[in-house]
Length: 101
Image 1 (cartoon, rainbow, N blue to C red):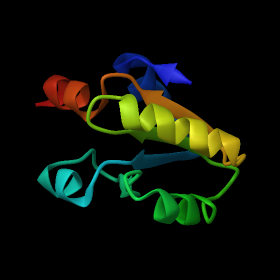
Image 2: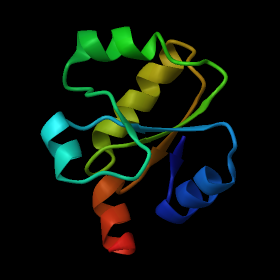
Image 3: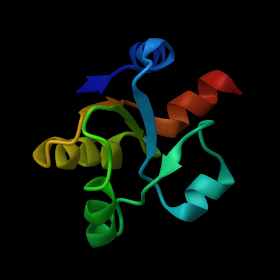
Image 4: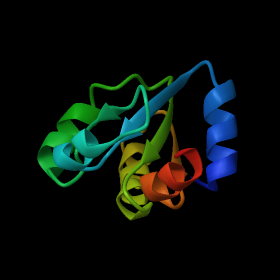
């Protein structure tokens, strides 16, 4: 499910069952990330799939990357494996960072 920044933030803030997932690279994550995010790099497909299979199916996953493309793919993969509800941040960290600087 693709959400605008305002929709995504509003739902994330009010969701007691939220899990914040950053699917960028470790270097991107280290350069800056949304507080409380967990990193699982989608650019390492086998590792990504292994790690998401260990995630809690009852959670709502708020997923982001740099611009929204990788996170959209990550949401599709999460849904394919039946892992929670995946919500993609359209515009990604780039949009979030511009709004929250």
